[in-house]
Length: 139
Image 1 (tube, rainbow, N blue to C red):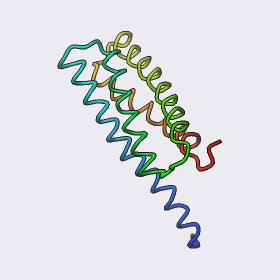
Image 2: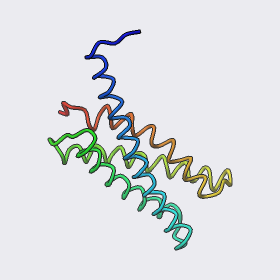
Image 3: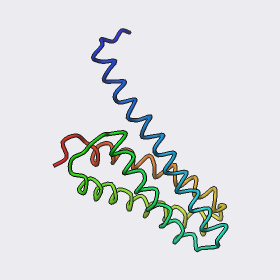
């Protein structure tokens, strides 16, 4: 199968954004996890409160990095942040629900539960942020 130059550049552009989104996501999720672990395990803070703090921190860092370095959108920053935050809060709700399910109902260890919730939420948030928050022609 052969590709023309335009097709190669289109694939590179899409792949580049996906890879960078993944790197930023890993960094943000790692920060989220580190804060969550520190607050819940080391400091003994209730896991749902620790999760709220860690997720909001991860969301904020992820937005700034994706806006400036990945999707490189400069317009409508406040509107984009509100959308990103809404997606993130939806992710927080899903994450907290999953944590409750995994920890309190299924009795899965808190750390394993957090990792599982991060994987699930990241997939949903990527799809929404790519197609809504950082689309080029945001209304």
